[in-house]
Length: 364
Image (cartoon, rainbow, N blue to C red; front, side, top):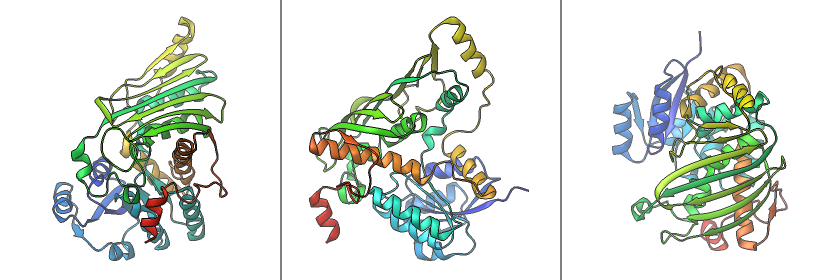
């Protein structure tokens, strides 16, 4: 019999999407308690998803001995402390993006998880489990793409003034960054998921759309460690919202749909260089086994890792790769110079990419 894991959720915003993901696999997970300071939203979610308990006491939630897993869906500046407390309480943890506010915190959390010797931490990167992107990974594994040349990624969304009426948004201290960190990070994780780590970043960033502290528009040029190049653009000032990923390989081009929030899903296009290779690509895709996608698939794979004792499907190293790209971009736009990766302990932004004013405010 498959072991059903008991879950507590902290937060009532993005938590709604997590709950929809859990709802598809009730044979694997049972959400038994939701914790939120927003009682109206919290109780509404409890009613909608038949969660038996509501609480505002996160300390008691973390200390409970009847939970296997705690799912953190709170604003970014709370993530590190909550993850630490959950791991030290001996429970598994899922944490929404952006995971933490520095590479140093990722490395410190890796040490905390190692010391705990049992609990697993899984960052959220659900977009990589879209069927379209999974088909690309499948073709790469089959040796049908050839050597990578160029990847272009567009995260062109719209966020007007109403979005920033939520008090923690648009501020370095609480949101920890702008569109690069909170919006484009999913698409950029998909870059790392396909090609591996980045090697060097040159970036421009600006605040052009709303009167906020953090960037809402950026353009990045990236050298990948595998030798290919990437061009990444992000804006929260696009009246027509799109996300587009385009991967150019020697033997084919793979291109996503334009849907801004489900761009990993089918139908992607896979165009080969000649009819014979197209036939091989099409024949391989005909054998692809479609599975659940998004949060549901990531949670399903996490359950498998917990039961089997294996690695989570998304690891701390995956989160580190994505945050290294963000760190390098912030460093490059401030210095006007390309920034090499990886980001190590001697890098000036290793412990924080927050501007000096935000660091001073945080320390106070």
